[in-house]
Length: 465
Ligand code: FCB
Image (tube, rainbow, N blue to C red):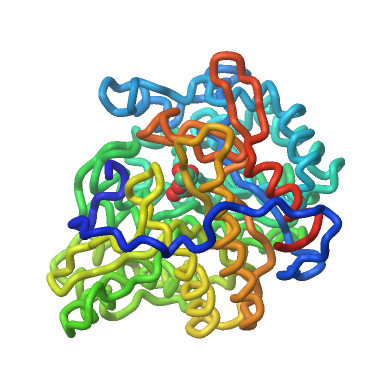
């Protein structure tokens, strides 16, 4: 439990049997699916720049906070770095062919801010932009819709030296960078995502200090959280100011919260945790205000209250076209506010496997935030099984079943991006955790289909389960 250890974790006996299903059944490609998805459902996969690209020092790319952090001794398991990663920068054509072979209809990737703006601001690096042109063109040529994330945690180091997201100006620098990308790729990219999981930056990068930039300061963390939201709002406005008709939203890591027992205390703790896990992000984006109970809980936090300026919430609440949902698992709280695990975990011990939580989350978004189109922008699991990953197949099948139920219940779910297309640099865990459906042999960079890749290909071909 290295990564998301902000909430107190007191593991109680895991309740077996919640990842329903047992081993996956081989399915004939021609058979009609029992659970058919909507005709144009966006079957996809996701990655991010620092985790996949490598080529850290090539073609004018500047360093990001993750380059600096990963090179600091003791930060990353086994001393791994993203210098080479899955070498996607050089192998993207092969990777595009893999996506095409799987039948993907949608591919979510992120842009390395410091590859296109080496110091985060100023002159655009033509070679950096050129790489993303080639990637997007390659997707379009293969009939795959690009879903482009602008910020997946890799703040340019030159901006970090000016305070990074602690500095309110970073929201503006981000919007300028976003504008540069809209100008370059706006006529080709139908869907943009501004920020990925601001919560993880706040909790893991600035509170636990396990991710870049490795700080442990909750008050600073909350200021960073506000500035990330402000950057999101300014980027949405920057897109609206262009002539393109791309859609835009954010990708939030959301976790339904449940009382761990029947006590009033546990129920209250679940509501409090819901404010922190979910509503403090959803409400500003989709309602233009922070939830009052969350604001009340920050009463003693003068820095964050000072960071929230008049007019900010109107910017942050600029209408979004869609909501990206990253779902990895639920959160259970006892009466003392401690987080307890009630279901099996994956190789990532912070991850509790509970597919029904996805249904609860999606239907809750519809109930509380209306009919905004939703994309599952990440969902998946890490497993030690290298190629015969039956556990991942079970995981995916159970989560897709929950997603299908949510569609039946009226949720406007338009796409599903499994995390991840291929094994990659899993942040503080380095290469020790494998999240891909395509196996990467890091010594040779050879790509091999895992059982889950073949299974997913069949699901896409049948448009259902
Ligand atoms: C998410 C991140 C993604 C990856 C998965 C496992 O929180 O957005 O980059 O690390 O977890």
